[in-house]
Length: 155
Image (cartoon, rainbow, N blue to C red):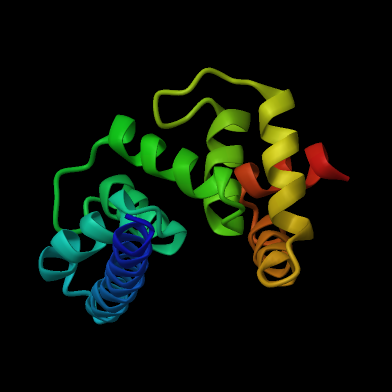
């Protein structure tokens, strides 16, 4: 009996590892297509990876629905995927979601507390924070009112 349990555990572990590797492969393929602006081809791969919890796939899927890349724009679906990626610490998702809360965009009501929390996390991110801060300062200097509002909120 114990040997059967051990064999089942080994089989389950092997299957789990194989599935994780498969999801990583699917995500990488979807990301490459997305970066090549082949959005319609990227969408099915990104959706599979996003549904399996890949935060990068969730963010890119949100961007597709946000900007209408390969699909009709849909704020509700974009927000759903931004929220999932942001909850996992994806800085760019936190940034876009925080900005939407600050400005009352994408069908969200203005919520400065949520906006500040999300934007602060995004701008302090060790990987993307510096790039996001640089982009914000540039946009604010060019007169972008949304960027100015973000900088005012998180100062």
